Each structure stands twice: as C-alpha cells, then as structure tokens.
Image 1 (cartoon, rainbow, N blue to C red):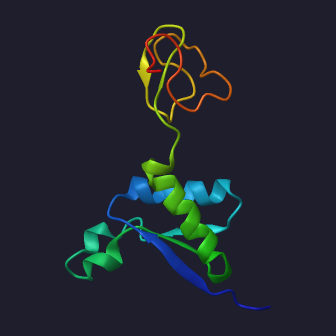
Image 2 (tube, rainbow, N blue to C red):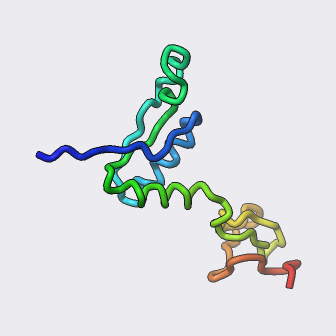
Length: 119
C-alpha cells in the first residue's frame, strides 16, 4: 500500500479557528487531520509554533485546501451586507435570514434591498 504524504495547510493559536478550518475542508469532502490540539501546555518546553493547533491534508489536496481556507477566512470575498425588506434591519452578508423578524433574504439579492436601501 502506498504511503500518502501529508502537509500542513493551516496553523493558529486559536483551537476553535483550527477546528473551523478543518470543518470547512471536511464539508468540501476533503480528508484532513487536526493535530496538536492539546500541545498548548508544552509551549516553552517545545517551540511555540510547533504547539499550535494545525490542519493537515494529503499533499495532492494542498492547493485546493489553501484556496478553500482563504475563501472561508477572507470576509472581503463574502456576500455584501443587506437590509431586511420586512423590518428594515441592517444585516451582515453572512446571514441569509433576518435575526429580528426571521424573514429570509430575497432570492438573488446580493446587497441592500428593501425599505431604506440606498438607490
């Protein structure tokens, strides 16, 4: 059986962020591993950067993984903010339902819509 080489594609001191990145890759169907989730206590005895939680993928998935990670963590590439047509609440583009009145974002709306939106 052939050994698959693994490469580190993400490392961060925040274990929740590393877990989020792992979930993004797993949701895209990419096998990945979380490593060093409990090494924080060894910082000082071991090099700090080697103790951070890390996400690893097979080497042949590295480019796709890095693109997915950049897309997930770069808010500039997200959907623009919008205004709810039901109640006029201003919402972050990450939300597709108004938190105030539970009205969904209109289909195809990519930015402000509804009463009070800039023309």
